Every structure is written in C-alpha cells, then in structure tokens.
Length: 78
Image (cartoon, rainbow, N blue to C red; front, side, top):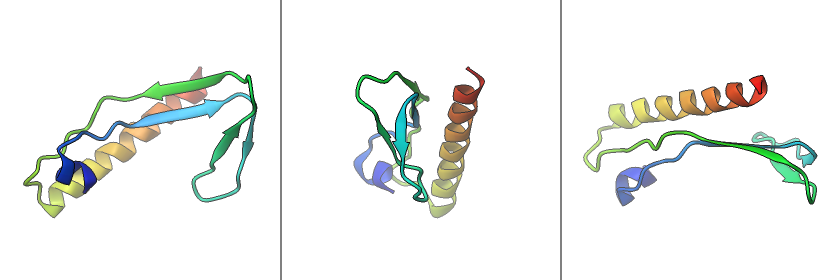
C-alpha cells in the first residue's frame, strides 16, 4: 500500500550475519555482533501502480514473498 501511495518501489532484501544474537520473535530479528561478516542480498525493485486494485496489490505481495524466499534460499546455498 505504501508503494502504491508514494510511487516508490518495494526493494526486497535479505541480511544474515555470521555472528549474531537472534531474537525469538516472529521475524527472527538479528542483532549483529560487532566486526562480524554479513551476507546481504538485494532483489529487483517491485513497482506498484498508483491505480492498482486490491487484486493487483495481492499479486504484488505474492511477488514480494516469492522474491524474499528466493533471496533466502540463495543465501543458504552459498
């Protein structure tokens, strides 16, 4: 919805630190330990039309979810 209202794209990304404190919350928040190495992966921007319908918004949300899953899978393989 924010991308629709602002005209800015959504940028999917994945961050995984080698040494970290991971909070046991729903989003598995990571707090990197100082001086650790991290893997950062950024996907292609996803644009949402300003006149997008609810169905189009849902389709973009599905695309975002797929992009995040793809980035996470790439991070695990390397």
